[in-house]
Amino acid sequence: MKKIAVLLSGSGVFDGSEIHEAVLTLLSLTHAGAEYQCFAPDIEQLHVVNHLTGEVAVGEQRNVLVEAARIARGEIKATTELEIEQFDGLVIPGGFGAAKNLCNFAITGSECNIAPSVSEFIQAFVDGQKPVGFICIAPVMIPRLYHSGAKGTIGNDSETAHAFNLMGGEHQEASVEDIVVDETNRLVSTPAYMLAENITQAHIGIEKLVKKVLSLAD
Image 1 (cartoon, rainbow, N blue to C red):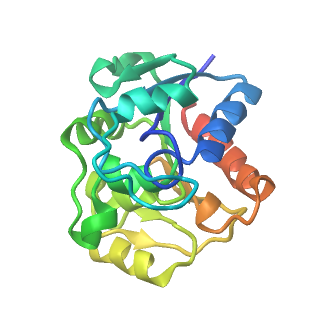
Image 2 (tube, helix red, strand yellow):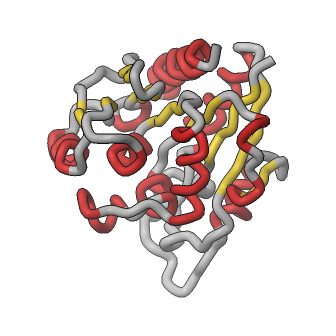
């Protein structure tokens, strides 16, 4: 049975992991007969967003690992606890947390950097030539993790695609139900809620991504 790590970035689309994408990832992995283990960095969120009003909660601070534990029902580990030999691959759901907490793309665009504990975690999979799946906005990290020319998609947003290419990646447009596969780098990406208008549309692409990640782990 294959075992896949799932990297979360908090809990909630505007300041953490997109909950639908995270749950659909876990569901798709289970349906495919794989085991999973959730991880998150033990760091503070960039900020906290009131998901009812969309406003930043001034003076409030939350921890990414603690918030992500809500999605994982408490069964989660810090990224520093990774034992890479136990895993066959990695999937990273989106949500603004991927661009605010895992890296700072939401703030600096193409000048972004990945949080050190996150970079070390993902790089262990890259260096081990293990497949990695990036969902929604998470693919903006691809050019920072792989050699120049690595392929990925965030859908069809021209500004984000331009930033992806500026960082050295090779962006490919995709529809909500599509996946983009870079066989050389063993990485897969799908737009999910970058384009999805409902949970069914998001599910189709995520399920395809999970199946491809598992097949690349053979």
